[in-house]
Length: 280
Image 1: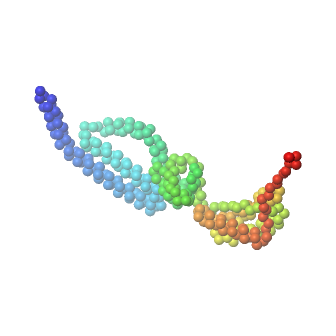
Image 2: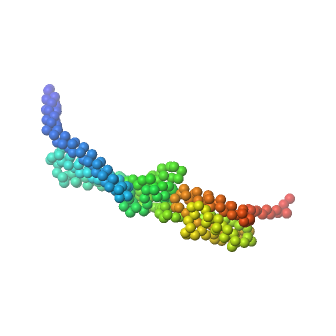
Image 3: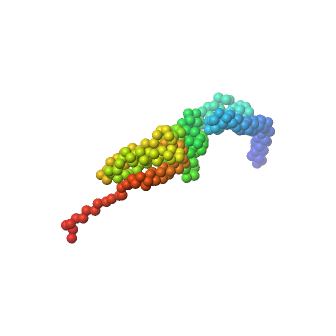
């Protein structure tokens, strides 16, 4: 009648004795994990600081993260060997190999983004502060994380673009060079003194603050219609978005002032209405 109770008591006593014997190993494993956790944080900060000093903050952040993950993985292996001394390292690595395949299949997209982020911070096709356009988004690169590149759009929004897209899709780096060309189409009436108009507009745009002297300003006859001539005004300025917008506004004002001052006739839009006399 009391055999089941005695068996349960024996089992509980055996488990308690095993836990007491295992307690030093558990404490040692916990101390090791805590030490490695804080050591990994210190190492990550050190790597980030050294990389930032060399102008590679994003690479430092990724390397620091990988270093912490690697240290914690090794610490978990050692802790498992401490807590379970009978477990062989080969068994642990076999279990990890099977688990790594399952994790790789489950988190393929995440791993792909992490690898792409690592390649991006090494190759550096763009950097923090660069202004880029990708997949319909345009803005300033704020940060390259392990999974995504953070963009701040010109209207103050944050966009997270997966690193795999940043690595495989066409990316326009608008600030890769110091100067960027802009253009404006000006239409004048057919029959105008084109050489004089070209000279007047070139002089007006060249005098605008922020327009680069080299490459030189160009005003090119671009298209000819029945009642008008299209002129394309080209100039070079700072590649960043804000100066581009401000300078383009000043160029428009300068062109408008030159048109008024030199009495350049701009064509008005016209339309022709044909009335069918047979209608009743």
